[in-house]
Each structure stands twice: as structure tokens, then as C-alpha cells.
Image 1 (cartoon, rainbow, N blue to C red):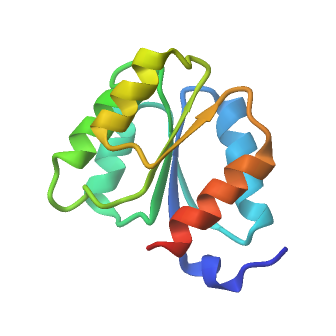
Image 2: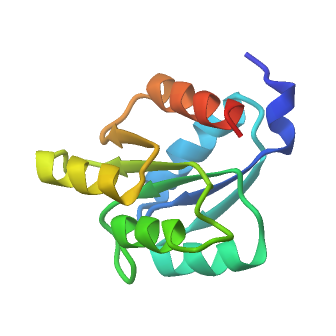
Length: 130
């Protein structure tokens, strides 16, 4: 399925696993998203956000330097960035973590290992809303 309206959208993919980043990027390309920036941790991601506008962030929770939940909190407290939709990827689905992410302002939550269909559904829903 081609989504020509997504060609102009820009997505930041943040994960310390190159394998996971490549899976996410591959899924994004199937729906015609080609403006993709990668970051291996939250610190790199936050630096990238200072230089470019993104329409969506897809981020792992557990990473070195700055983890996903702390990155989310930083983004939500930053006036310029706080409205960017944020999908959290994690293998850790404890009730406490889900609540913490919701409280911090996450838009969507996806558990690892993930299938690409639910990821694509969430991406389409969030980018349609922007």
C-alpha cells in the first residue's frame, strides 16, 4: 500500500539495536516514508531534534546514555517539541512502566518483539493526526 501523503513525513527512529532500527525503517519504507533519521540512544535523538523537525518519534525504552522514558519526558517539557507524536517500543510491559509512559505523554506503546502490521497501523494513525 502506497501512501503518497507520507512521502514528506520525517521520522526519528531511536534504538540502541541496529537490528531493531533496521526492522522499523524497513516497515516505514513499505508505507512510503523515506525521510528517516536514526539515533542509537536518547542523547543522539535529542541532539537531532535540535536541528530538524520530525513528524514522529519511534523510540526504545531501554538504552544507554538517555533512555526512552527520560527522552519522552524531555521532549514533552520542551515547548518546541512537545506535540511530536511518540511511539514507545519495549520488551518491558509491566503495569508500572505502561502507567509511567502514559503519564509522561506517550502516544502509543508497542511491545517487543513486534509485528510490522501493528507498528504501521500506529504510525498511520499518528501521522494522519498531524
